[in-house]
Length: 299
Image 1 (cartoon, one colour):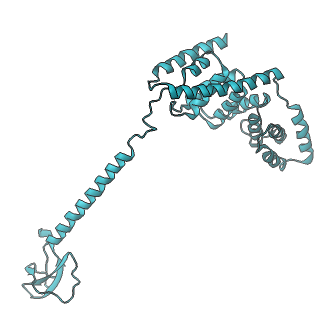
Image 2 (image 1 turned 180 degrees about the vertical axis):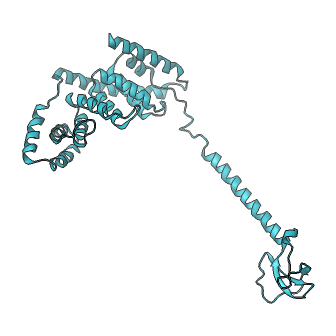
Image 3 (image 1 turned 90 degrees about the vertical axis):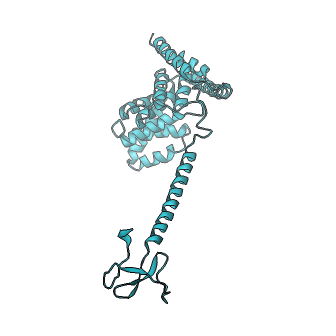
């Protein structure tokens, strides 16, 4: 309190007392009071220690209350909600078994499940990459395309434009329209390959024919960088870039797409019906099955 003891601003004496007189000027405010110096008998306003300490105590209480409420609300905000408390059970056993037994479509579906994640499966890009690679190595065009995008974007693996180009080329040559479009973009931007506007134009033309909506506008953008003769040559080139797989193989992929849809439907039903259990057993089973499938594929 000594530090806050009022003193006379005129004679600097600290022998002052509170004045009983009401000053006609009310500028004292809440914390200041009228004082009179015993030495020079002059009146002056000064901060009253008692009022200051009361104000500081009240402010401390307010700050403490605000901080306490903030902490309480913060803890409440980060309390696990419904979606966070769901017990994740892992991929459906049927899908894991099929993927482990070497089914390329099941491996693709499992990879997409790990890539996107859902209420039952935690997204795991590395696990998605592993299964996508196995499916792509079996020649499934959709997996070849996705594996190329994994490499291009660095999802679940290190970014590698050269590998991305190789897998996009496989998907494009197998007639997958999205792969053809992305391969055209790779030629256009020089991602993993030397820039080649003719190749870019040709592959984008095929992608446009295959139903990729943005392929036509991208092809027109490429054409702006080309001479008229080069555009004509690129149009002729696109006629020669036909899918390598025979019609029977294309039919097999059509059937595979239907199988993939069924696998996803089974996965969703199994996840809804299965009681909440830990996924340790399923994960171990998937690992063993994957090793068995890989060994079988190598033989």
